[in-house]
Image (tube, rainbow, N blue to C red; front, side, top):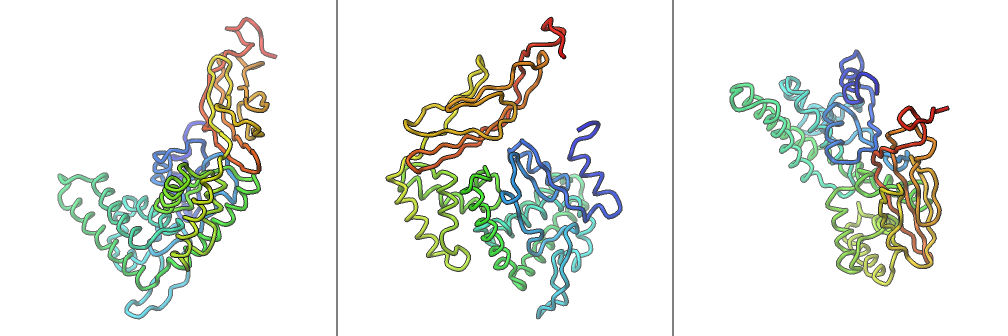
Length: 356
């Protein structure tokens, strides 16, 4: 972006009247956890990686008791023992939380995302929330700050206590997890129809423990990782929210059934000399197809060539693609990460050939 980047733009929007309630999402080719963390710390509501599809990344708009003031709050509900229980409870009970709002906002965002990840538990999310709050205090202040540092740590403990009390009184996880299960089914349908290319991690829809459980079952019984198609079929079989034990058994059955299946290879090598991707190894009898050919000039079968002809000299090109393969009714998919490629091109002053 010219002049300022997306994160600085987000910060400025948040500072405008009404900007705190504006939904802001990052969409970028950078899919690393550090990039996601920086975007959330800048005040964004969510982080989407390209290529994107609405059904790949849709999440509930509000999750649980934390609340950072940007999402619309529902009407207060009376609960025995509390005057009101609403998202953002801590800011109602402990006004001093507002003093450290900018410090605590990233931790609060992460807590909301944790609640909405399928397979998450309130206790695990709440424990991580306290750690994130304390880390924020350590990051923004030092022990040498004296009273300010101690006030931040004390407020973090009170904030955490209020959120835990809210999660016990309201028990928001059931409804949130049901929404997460529906979201997972929608993602699975899009993946199965090849309208969505993603990974479990990229969607942000699944708790890391759930991903580990499915991957671990496949490694134990099928001696390999599941394809994205197998992962979606496995995770969406049964009712994880209401019958976790039955769902656990289905995960093992899917993994055992996959032991006799060998998905086609979607491993890719990059040839810097010829500036092309090539499938290696190639599965005999498999059909290969490329899509989202950003920066790619052509594709055919097992290879795709970068856009290098008719380009200005020393042009920086973004290259990335989605590779799908099918063999004997078994499918596989790979997202080839985007990267920058400087191509020599065929026109420009340095090439001695004017660009038209």
